[in-house]
Length: 261
Length: 259
Image (cartoon, rainbow over all chains, first blue to last red; front, side):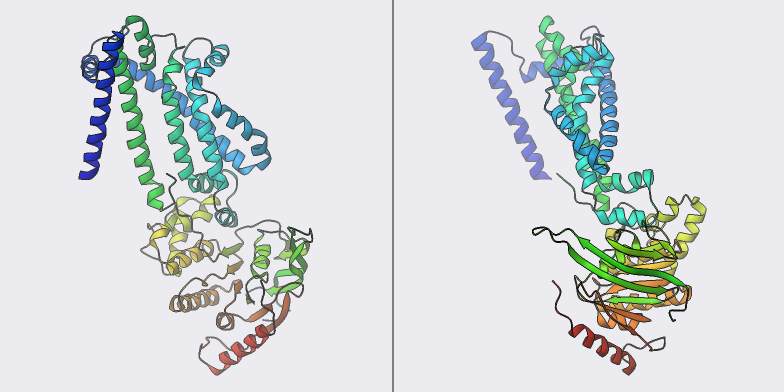
């Protein structure tokens, strides 16, 4: 405990020191005001204190981004799990579709912008689509792998006990592949959150952390943009550390299943 | 028990082959097997590893379909696994994500039985195998013997017409194994289910079975049968039991080592 506290203190100090050094060098060499950790923190405190950013409070931006993220991620998680279970069960379907999913995974987030605009026009639909489409492949691929690796004797035992169809899926295939499902969701969640900035470029409504970051280009309020990046990182870290860690503790670790790290 | 009793399991010239890998010739695991098990009979399949005992059991369970020949259960052709044939595997294969109680109630829940009835029947099955007090434990927290008890309760609760047991006590220490053999016999005598029991342990086969089917490698899958005439309850150390064990050992010794 003490040791991990020490290492996290050191790594934070290194990060802040490096950031300071870069800010100093950039400010002197290029003559632009690169936000330092200190100005960023001050700006963050101001924002949290209620200062408006792009005409809205930072809380409004956070709420808007979280809502989009949650919606996009829900679509990706639902679709990814459904796809993974189906493809893990039907080999022909898997062979026919899995290259498409692998291809989707290679498309960079920004490249979805024209597709999203063509499909949904400017607005929430396009944003949610971009989050969903980048979060979907890792979920789908991991669930598929997990379902295929469910021990055949569990499936035999379940069928022997009379389980078929949705009972087999819900009580054997999904819990049996939960370690893989959780790691897929974890990666998907991260992917979806990371694409937020790109996704909110086309949101059009004027809210969201990603939107605010892009707007900093015009307002030159880079400190606020940095603060928003910080908020995004903290929220992502929180979801990763607390939500998933506790999910794993309550399921996979409790059942003593092998955990894929 | 004789062949005149009600038929429960019948295999008629059943062969099972798997695709050969290099030369393309199919590898026979079972060849032209005829087997008959009467209702209520306790039959052990005895033979060295790799001679197709488990494959035969999997055919009766419906996990595999024969390459040729016919496997019937209760007069009907076997097409798929089902709760009328309760299988106890060598590894207990309890679902690790379910508690002991949820595991035992799994089949009842799959059949759509309401909660109250599930509870009552599940509890009775747990009591039958001596697992009261472990209802809320997860399988990893149980010993090997307790896991097999739970696996047995999981199928007994469905009142199957036959129990198919694939070396269920093979991984247990001698003491636990013999205790569970006695419990199995107690349950079998109380409920008179048909049991098909796979083992490579001579003493186990002699102690448990009404009839021992000695198996060897294909193409002569079934080598001989032996009716165990010793009356029950049996004494493992009795002279009669020892004679059966000697006889079975002699028959196994005639066989080549299967690989």
